[in-house]
Image (cartoon, rainbow, N blue to C red; front, top):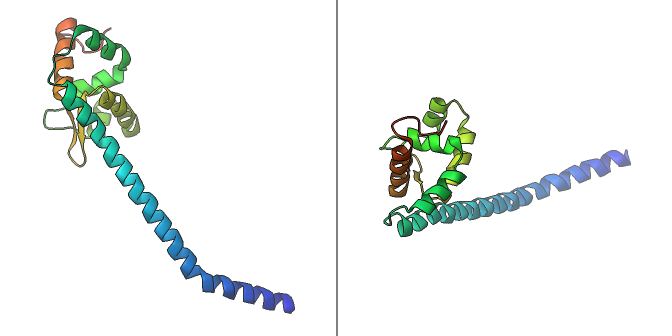
Length: 149
């Protein structure tokens, strides 16, 4: 019997503390969520700032070759399939036959080189630098495929 009383008292104590514990959890979660949003916001702005510094300059040959060597075939295909008014990850994944997660992972490389601009709810578009790169690549490869055979 005393064991049942202790358990009942323990449960009562836990139930008494639960609202405060829950509130503490909620506040910790909200703070973490706020910091994540701030971090994403800062990171999302970095490629655009970098792009503004470099996209007005013509893409020289050494830089073009460096980008071409470092971008995957899928990255090049993504760039070639982006519509001018923006393309969604879902749309690109469907066109290229890969998962949305795979498309989003490739965005990171394209953002590092300043090839694309992403806008929440509007999709991804080629940056001025990306347009220069694609034009130069198509000239080098002729009118054939954007990916070297």
